[in-house]
Image 1 (cartoon, rainbow, N blue to C red):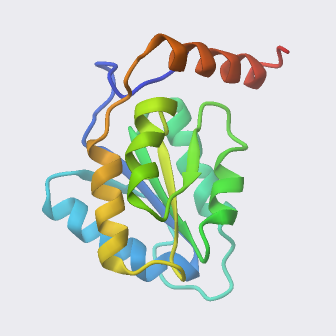
Image 2 (cartoon, rainbow, N blue to C red; image 1 turned 135 degrees about the vertical axis):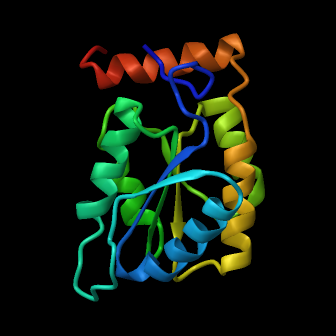
Image 3 (cartoon, rainbow, N blue to C red; image 1 turned 180 degrees about the horizontal axis):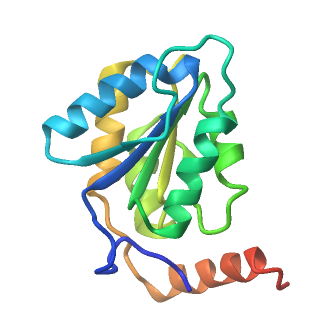
Length: 162
């Protein structure tokens, strides 16, 4: 079954965040704004700056929480955003995308039911990161038949079908 943020069992205000050392400062910034604007934020780490940490240790638990439905959407941050995106997409049910511009921040949700954005802490500034996050969180899946059809094919692949 395809999980979308329109299901009543989801708390649309609960957002998960995770980062390694390269995204730590940006994560803390976004987390504060999210809390200040009324979101519930679940922080998957790192909780303190550790220069030698590894992004999969924090991104994978966030991705699992999204797949299980305990958080609605996620924000994952590493140096470029690429590693976080690669790691997150290893978890079935996660549709994570590297986002560094506005169009994809909403289009990814509207067409592909994207449920996690991956940002580069060394690539974009705080202002753009918040703008992209805000766009991502306010976007809704269109539920158009063609998009549902495509997502069903992806889900089948995740379930081991051809």
